[in-house]
Structures are given as structure tokens and as C-alpha cells.
Amino acid sequence: MGAVISRPICALIGLLYPAYRSWKALNTPDHEDDKRWLTYWTVVAGVNAAEVFTDSLISWFPLYWPAKIGFYIWLQAPMTEGAMHLYNKFVHPTLKQHEDEIDKALQNPTKIAMDIASHAGKLAEQGVAVAKAAAAMSGHGKNTSPPSSPSLGPASGPSHVASV
Image 1: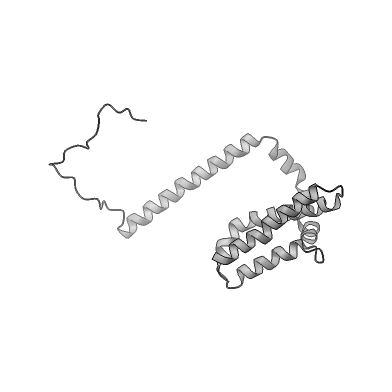
Image 2 (image 1 turned 90 degrees about the vertical axis):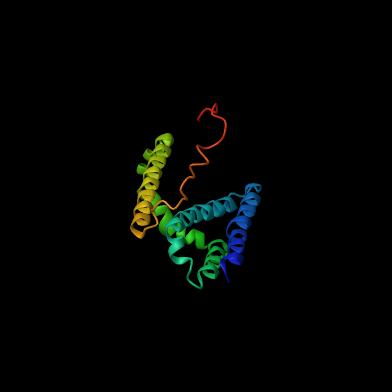
């Protein structure tokens, strides 16, 4: 099963169905179903965050997509309570251990956003520098545009247009 078919199935099983069930849970007086779906979303958020780093490494394995679909089913199935197991075994203890640090870091969301933007900018600059160096080493960094023709003169267009 390829990604073209599996991605929509994953979205349906892992996101849309749980979103609908969460909405239904919010509209019942019972708080147990609220807890179940909040636990699911907490675990899925952690899984999605980890996928940012691992997806490109493992998504090409032949059984990746069927395994991912099965994982989503395992997380939410009432008879397995996979999300509750992962939450109790990993998520809760980890968050509890680092709760004060996380709370302190989240007190200033503007600083967090600025730090992330600054870091992303530095990474982009490094990526551009690496790409330029690689292009120069492979000979692709040479100017390959055709020489300008003296008969065409400078670029045409209105000279009164202000630069932005």
C-alpha cells in the first residue's frame, strides 16, 4: 500500500475519526470519554512531533503505512487502550518530570517564537551556504545565464518605479 492511498487513510483513521469522536465526547455529560480523547490527542501530538524527525528515515520501509494505520487503530481501540498505555508509561512521567521547566519556558511565548524564528533563520542561512558550496564544488555554481546582448541595452521598463 503506497503513500498515495495510505496518507488519506491515516488522516481518516488517525485524525478525522478521533476529531469527530472528540466532538461527540464534548457533547456528553460523561467526562470519561473526554479524558479518553484528550489522552489520545496528547499521545498523537507527541507521535507527530517525533515524526518530524523520523518520518523521512522510516517512511520508505515497505510496511510503514500499514503499520502506521494499525498503530492509530491500536491507540484508539477501546479493547487495547493503546493511547492510555503510552500516556501512563511515557508521556505522563516525562511531562511530570519536566513540568516546572516547561511551565517556565512557556511563560513567555513571544520569546519562544522569536527564538524559534531566529534558529530557523540561522538554519536556512546554513542550508543556503551548504548548497552554494556544493554547487561551486560540482561546477554548477558557474554563471550559466546567456551573456547580455549589447543591442538590447538596459532592462526596459519605467524608470520612475520606486524600489520596495
